[in-house]
Amino acid sequence: MKGKNVPKKPLNKALQLSGAGLQMGATIYLGFLLGGWLDQKLEFTFLTETITLCAIFLAMYSLIKQANKINE
Image (tube, rainbow, N blue to C red; front, side, top):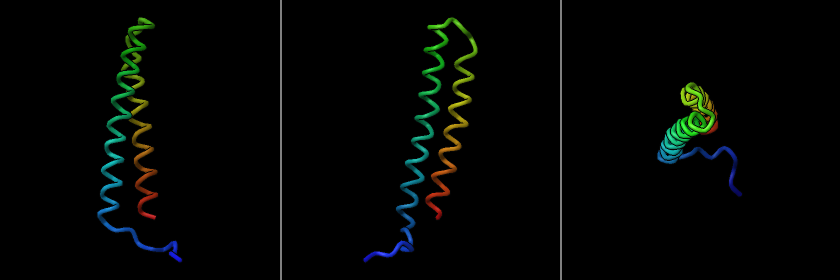
């Protein structure tokens, strides 16, 4: 039976963190696209910047949570 305290391989950690980086980039880009679309539909001028900034904070939060989970 496998124990819970089996150390993870360094390569596995690196792959998980690189995937988290790609997820971060995708989150920010999708936030930018959503903000631009909402700016056009609702005829505002501030939603692109606001939603992109919220996506950045969300992506950073997610990255920190994933990094903490990997290091446990």
